[in-house]
Length: 216
Ligand code: GTP
Ligand code: MG
Image (cartoon, rainbow, N blue to C red; front, side, top):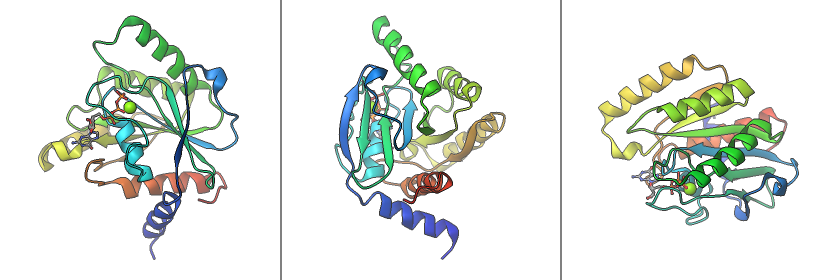
């Protein structure tokens, strides 16, 4: 079996374990201890973070999704009793109609978490394939670069565009990421609706765990 196929299979095994909601928190003081490898999903509001977590874990409705931007307002934590992994669903940024107190809260919570969390092994930054990297996405990527927090961009909602547009956005995103020191290779072809690209995402997580000496 090739290394890639082995990773994909290990990823499937990992996410066959039951993942459940552990808690939502609005205050970083409530974070659990840094006792397992943590991955976080960040991105603009409505980009598909919660949907991707559902597709990843194979648990429909695990993370709440909505057509209305601003659905996720806390850091929501998902864990499995039998895997040394913690998944964090983050509130989205860039929601134009968000009231200022919400934006301030987002900034305080998310920025502090992203820059200062010891257990945080990688941030998956989701970018809508229809729009590519926008100014507020670039701001987050720059913050992660400066804090030397490793991140990996995932293009979402690929099912909403044609193959030509997909190719263009992939090329442009790759070009933009090549200048960024903390960026890992782009993960493409993700559609939470169709399940495309989920195997690659799972494989990336298994690889990350094995780099940290954790068996998936
Ligand atoms: P906030 O919590 O508000 O920041 O949003 P979010 O990033 O968690 O987005 P969410 O997962 O709630 O998805 C927003 C909307 O996009 C929902 O209506 C999803 O069904 C839809 N959606 C998410 N991923 C995809 C995808 O890959 N393809 C399509 N067609 N729709 C998607
Ligand atoms: Mg959400």
